[in-house]
Picture 1: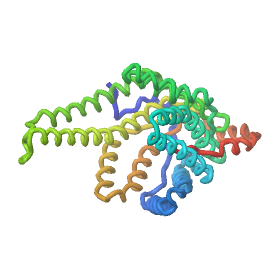
Picture 2: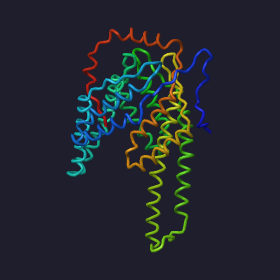
Picture 3: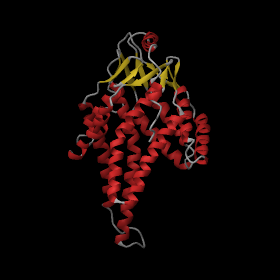
Picture 4: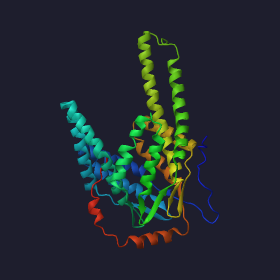
Length: 356
């Protein structure tokens, strides 16, 4: 059984201390950015959404601090808009094809499936290249062939194993994504094993799936006609509606918790050359934040969404630390000298962000 309130991190050597990230964003500041972005995106029929993404990311990156320095986001709104136009055309083609011919719809679906790993590969390149710390850019060096393996080929194992291969597929994906990431010339690596992923998925299936089954059983095992004025058939239809509501509500509650447990496991097994990371997200605190965020968003008709996002991001970011094997300043200086001769021609190649 996994102890959810105690991350599986190795003990920190006495001569090293974790340097935790700090997050300075506030709900009030982000609310102003969010509401302006929303209104301008509506007025421009979605065109401004590319600029909205840049503005949002720049705010969150600049609000995230490590060892006295903030991160930087250099994404170009025009490049993001190009990617969204291409993605919209592809999706639009599929929707139109579905109205014209089943055969044409199948061709369009296969086209979307065939292009999606390439889209993901280019988006990973764009996202990391436009992220920087102390003037040094991150990079993604993964091969497009591996993108097709991880996003298109391996997922089919879930179909032939009734989902039992999902932890294996997830572990291979995260290992590739992190292992192909660079900070300057420094290499990231993820050491989480397939067994680690199966343990986490097993707990999630036991707690999440078991809890959901109990809720559904409680609904369906009652008297089918307790509601005055309804026939037995109408009462059963109402119960089915309750079940659907419970399923969606349960998934909305569990997904953020599962995502943060994955964050713990992945970061606690990730290194950057000789440096290690630690993530201290706890299940109980994340459950409280998730539930109260949902309630606040519902009670304010959605206006609390910016505050909810900042609240959850602050907890996740400030639970993350780097355990530097030596001076972090020396690492940054070494990375800077190694990338100083790198040509900027790559920027032209990475000029499209396929933001789906």
